[in-house]
Image (cartoon, helix red, strand yellow):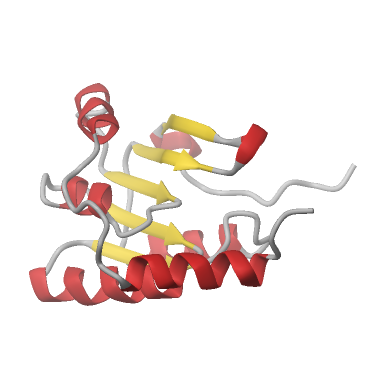
Length: 150
């Protein structure tokens, strides 16, 4: 059996607190930006230390950065505030059922509109690992809706 969510959280908090992580943007971030030049905002899911979030924000996009590591999210929020960049940092596991409400509230508070991108560079573990997920969200579809029970 794998590690508990609490054990994974402790691991990632320790990892991001060490500051021994890359700070340059990933190649996938450069690709995503080249494919989505008309994007007004990025939702960076599993953002880690925010290296790609900062890359997007420095190029004029509003960003909502989501990660389960409170250490990473606190650091992103501090650095974004200091740099006066349009990044909203949210601490949440990606499978948290309230995440959609948190994202919607952050988008509304930041007055995000227009074409958006859901972006995940590297997420998951083992067989469920995803490397490079990119999904454009057209203007008309930007309202997030909770799935209905069937």
